[in-house]
Amino acid sequence: MAAVDAPVATVAEVDAPRPRRAWARRLSLWVPAGLTAFVFLACFLGPVVLPIPAPVGGNVLESSLPSFSPGHLLGTDPNGNDILSRILHGGRASLFVAVTVNLIGLAVGGLLGALSAYIGGKVDTVIMRVLDVLIAFPSLVLTLAVAQSLGPSLTNTIFALAFFSIPAVARVARAATLSLRELPFMTAAELAGTPWWRMLLRHIVPNIAPQLITFSMLGMGTVIVIEGALSFLGLGIPAPNPSWGNMISEGQASLSATPDLVIWPSLALFVTVLAFNLLGEALRTHWSGR
Amino acid sequence: MTVAVERRTRNVTAALLASPSLRLVGKRLLMAIPITLGVSILTFWVLNLVPGSAAQQLLGVEATEEQVRALEREMGLDKPAWVRYLDWLGGAVTGDLGKSFVSDQQVTTLLGERLVVTFELVILAMVGSLALAIPVALLAAYRPNRLFDRLSMVVSVSGLSVANYVLALILVLIFAVQLGWFPAIGYVPFTEDPVENLRTMALPAAAIAFPLFCFYTRFLRGDLVDQLLGQDYIVTAQAKGVGPWRVLIRHAFRNSSFGLITVVGLNLSTLIGATVIIEQIFAIPGLGQLMVQAINTRDMMVVQACVIVFAVVTVVANLVTDLLYAVLDPRIRYGSS
Image (cartoon, rainbow over all chains, first blue to last red):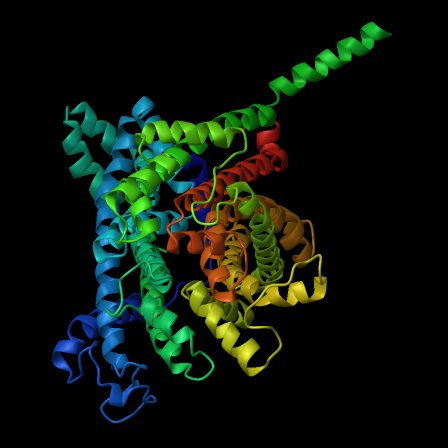
């Protein structure tokens, strides 16, 4: 299959529009990387370094201040809590959930998919059928079911989201490993008597890692959106702790009077997800060498 | 005469049995059964992670031990989980999904009314996103890297980063609060007033459809451009003097449409999942709203039924995608792949 495709690829290279300049290519990787770094820094260092009030326990006398008020850059919510502070602290929770879920997904799903493809046969069939069951659930529905059963909390949110992250990563890892299996270096390593765990860790994992990391960047965005949806429905991070989801949900009640309450957390959500999506896209182009 | 007819029918049957599409259909149908069973087991397990609390939650903290025990016995919660699962499965196969703990109505009755509403929303969103994505992708691929192409890429990349619940609120803010073109919330049945029904469905359908539109546009545009850049049949068509639009539509798009079907199929679960939160925002009495309500009132029977319906619909939708693929793609139809 690969042999048939190869000449087509050469034609595409010849006919392709002239390659973008080096600086433009570097920029398309560094801008999203910088944006992602900025989001992480703002959420984790921002509240420590900047003089902003705590996200909860605000003064009721200062409730519902408009944006750009003195001392409260993005205003306050009806409880008098500083919105900027709530966004940054909410971002911590979102990013923490997203990173943890994706690490679990990468570790468990990646190993499961790679093993499944490497061993093949019945093991492969069984693992993939079980994952088919998990994939059959719309992710939000399954997460809601888990959240309902265990009750809203940070740990349960992570657990619920990992449920659907694992099968998706496993599928990608499996497909990547399958295409590796036919390559000469794999056969050579096998003929040299390399044990299976060494095959997996030294030969398969480094080679499928770029694809998996690219995929998990897109997964970061998805997890943040679904975590927001859970909190929006009141089943994620419990109030009064801030999260972008529950901030948007609280703001919805007074959407026409004070749209700022919805707009600021929405903007934070959008920028973060956009940063991860662009980074994933840039990494994909970077690693595919186009 | 009759022998001839008989022979012909036998030949047709033999041909059908040997047909690769039909074999694929059969294989996929058989695979859907264990998946559906697995889905129901998983749902049951997930919802029973915390055992025996349903009765307590229904009665509240002030209920006595005896009251809780009595209600558990009444609801059958005192039996072990696997017995309850088999009971439930037996009922489900005969079309009985049990009774709601809260309203005492049959779950199937509750689901029936709601399914139609969600179905309409899903169809509207799907048709809307495709109807917009196909022309935009064709226009973008017509002149790659030109203004329209760049613009459509910027829109679709940013559109993919907008959560649908955020988009829904922005749409409400603009089109309901500011402009007043559409109602912010509410639902009118199609049978009552078709025009009003479409007006109430417009914003929710748009909120679900927009991210999908972005996804389809990006996929289709990429696939079209990849083909235009170097596939032999495109070069042949161009060399024959076929016009650029005709090459794009008849040669490139026809080929991309299979990929598009797969992508649409893979996205169906996202689409169906999106209805849950969108129905909540727009107060549309669909399946998703029923599920969230049931979660809030701890009505486990209803939650269970909703989760399973969502999952089964996804399984069936994926099945239909596969079948469509088998019917449309000549490589599968003639079994030469």
